[in-house]
Amino acid sequence: MRNQSPAGSSMTDPADPSSLMHDFDVTEAEISARKAFLEFGAEDVAKLQSLKPLAQRYATPMIEDLYRLFLAHDPTKAFFRDPKSLERVKQLQKEYFIGLTEGEYGTDYVERRLKIGAVHERIKLVVKWYLGAYAFYLRTVSRRIFDEHKNDPAKALDLISSLTKLIFFDMGLAIDTYIAQREKVIRAQQDEIRELSTPVLRVRDRLLVVPIIGLMDSARAYQLTDQVLRSIRAHRAKVVVLDITGVPTVDSAVANHLIQTVQASRLLGARSIVTGVSPDIAQTLVRIGVDVGKLHTLGDLQEGLVEANKILDEA
Amino acid sequence: MKIPVLKQGEYLIASIQEAATDADLQLLLNELVRRVGEHRSKGVIVDVTVLDVMDSFAARLLRDIANTVRLRGAETVIVGIQPDAAFTMVRLGMTLDDVATALDLEEGVAYLDRTLKRKRGS
Amino acid sequence: MSGESRIPISRDPDVVLARQQGRALALSLGFSESDPMFVATAISEIARNIVVHAGGRGEIVIRRLDQNGRVGIEVEATDTGPGIANIEQAMQEGFSTVKSLGLGLPGARRLMDEFEITSRVGEGTRIVMRKWARSSASRNRTHITLG
Image (cartoon, rainbow over all chains, first blue to last red; front, top):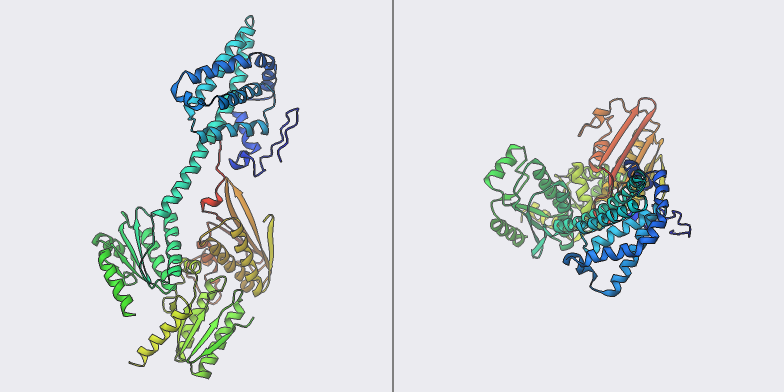
């Protein structure tokens, strides 16, 4: 359960299935590892907290400058056409900016960062623009820190150092979230492609044709076999024509998958005809020791259909 | 639990239930062999539609049924193997090459009718 | 489903019970297509080994796995039977003598993604096998790490 106390203590639980941390598998260990690599520790927290008065003083003019930047460039201007949403986003940005110096950088903080990345991916605000925004924060805040500590440049640098670590921590999370979201979309698309690329066609009562196109890896072969078997059952097929014309490479793995499909189909009472077996493939099959007597193979799909129809008509 | 065996004309039909144990299957083998002899049945249909898992023991036993029953002059056909069961069987290498199979009861009976007709030399 | 299922294996019906539990967990974790059957069958094979070759003195524990955003199922079978003198031989495909373990172990290995077996003559055998859900439905959790 999420519970933010006024003191801002971390209460988002990475194990909570409704949290983004759970979704993106960001554990406490992961957070610690990132901070450790950035050499971000308790001293940095203290330094950042000391910047809070400065942040509060300059939050409004800084955000105005940031949005001046966004609106001055067409690609980013496009995101802020609606004045109401522009005001809302500016407010969120101000909160973000002040949040950099609150001194609380635990799971709640991380959850908010992940949200930013997820939102950016959703609205298609690509990485280069929000990296530009981070760069803006870093250089404008650095300048103001420097002005504040004119007489102590070493201290200014020290403070800027801590801020840099935190900004990079934020960027890492936002970018990785963006990437993870993209990968999720790509995986879903791959699954769809895999299913679409192996259609099982019912061309006649009790006859299925499966035109197999493209490279066959074991995941695809598994999905193919499963799909063919379920189709045999659903359509009560007596003959299945497996056309491998569109399979570029037939090695022993592919051949074995094919044979397994044929053998399993027989257990469901269906006969299989494998078509598209070129002379090359025939040689490969023999060479790798496939019992070609077990396989009913034919040169092309056309022949296969003629043969299938014959079998069905005779029954 | 005892696996029911029904006589339907010249055929015996055994319907294996969901949670059949190894012992149940073994008893089925004995029962079928006995009754094929008793009724002089010509065909045996073993329906595994609802059997939860077809593992190496079950597959081997089905093969034993087919072989033993054949010695008594009857043909066996296994029907109702589910898609995932069939996939598992071939993964295990239990392809039951010498055992006739059909999609379901209807196809099984049709298979036996055809085979018997051929045997009797029509 | 949470926690784990612990099934003592001593007689025939326990083989059925163990495999039913395995299938149920696999289904509840989102395993799809033929995977639940693969898991159930693998469990059936090793459970039977305990009944037939370990004098029915063993148990099977089935648990959920979560790793790197993937969901999986782990089956741990332990027995205090006579143990296997020659594991390599027992794991050979098609190895069969009257005293052999039949197709049980190699079969189970073929059906699962990971398979480990340790055994001590006179003490017993321990098998741990795992399978990971393959469909994207159970992989909605994407993953970020440093490396």
